[in-house]
Length: 457
Image (tube, rainbow, N blue to C red; front, side, top):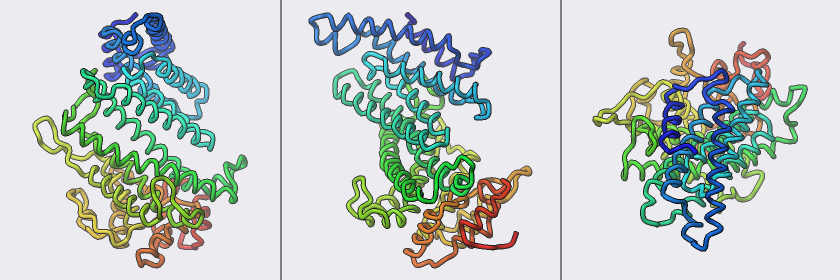
């Protein structure tokens, strides 16, 4: 049986990219050893059930609790590294092998006795969900949503299992920190699913193996909206948890055995929460035509929209929240997060025209425009389209790539509700270069058909 120290060294080596084999950083030999160790833990659990001591049955020994914590970290790191090393989809055999390994780790996480002492092992179920979502099929999306929900529910059970018992601070902090990762993944899947379906709707209709038909549009709108609402709600909760961690423990530079939440802990959850809120708002008008109530905890559509705007603002503020180094000095936002922030402001300028959203950042003059409107959208579009080192900074994400008629109609309705008539379809035609799939043959025709426009080539 591995000692806790041996597992900790393996976890750190995986994170630091110090382990390599012919099959990548994680091979079947490592998984075999993980499973053998868990079998031994389960033997210990079986022995405890044969005693008359309720305490022994409910709690592992101090030594085994230490091993469980370390095993949770090892499962987390191994599943994440496989996901990072996932080969391209066209390498089918290699991709399926990686997916099987992640599934083995997810099963190992489920097989752990006293699993609430290994909270990071939930990361393997998260990784399994992300693999499922990347199949880009309805079955894959549904499987991913189910796996995310499993991880979230197990997390809630683990919190209850520890309760307010003394000496559980490390485990409860570990559960808070892994929650940030679980929510980031689940909200990300909701956003990615919606962005993929909305952006590829025309191609999905035209493919020989059609992924959907025009009659499926209402079904997809309802499915996406339901998952986005969940993403918004848990995203807000994740931001609250990040604030609790910051107040009580602070953040770290490099994850360790005891800590996981880095100094950038607000930014990615903020990005995903803001994206989910904007997508939900963009679909709300179409959803209102399909059902009288929004669902979830909302009694009225007005309440849902107000909550989504509030969630968007919370997410946006989290993105801009200064990231301070160990000496308390602000660190610059990386290029990927800058692009995401501009994409989010652009989406908001289109679906929430008139919103005042001052920015504390200054990496582009477009951020000096506090009022989000068509003028702001033009400035933000120009920044994304600008080429740096021969490469365009970015696309306009889903709002600049939609070919699903329901989404386009719903965005038009959002704008009308704010007193703005038209403008979205014209902006799309004018800034076709910001379409995520603009370089694909036939894409211009698909977009024009979806928008009902015939602009210049």
